[in-house]
Length: 121
Image (cartoon, rainbow, N blue to C red; front, side, top):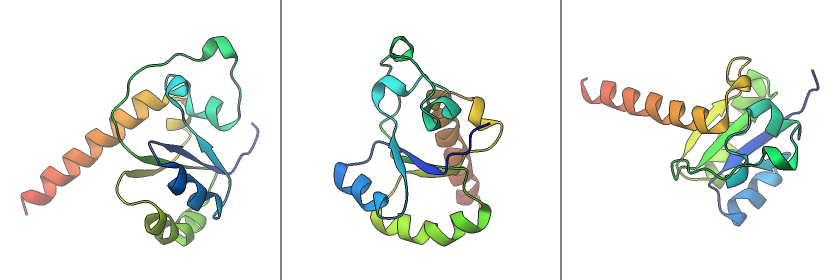
């Protein structure tokens, strides 16, 4: 499999995207790419006919593709300085095969469960 270290981003402003470009390679997940698998977006492995516009939650997302844990730890504060809010995630072998639409819904659901758990403390 082709290695491709990049940040996959969704829902960010042009200024936020440009700020992240100072930190590394950035690929934007546009509305017509949300039904594609993460690995296909990261590696530009899709055809024009694969692109379908579908709605997803209006949520900022930054996915770290092919970053080591140490690299994510080193960059996370800089990313949070450039982008306020949203969800951050590392692409895993499992999530690599998910569509972005499925993944963003899953991440939002996980965040909501975590926040509910925090309220119970």
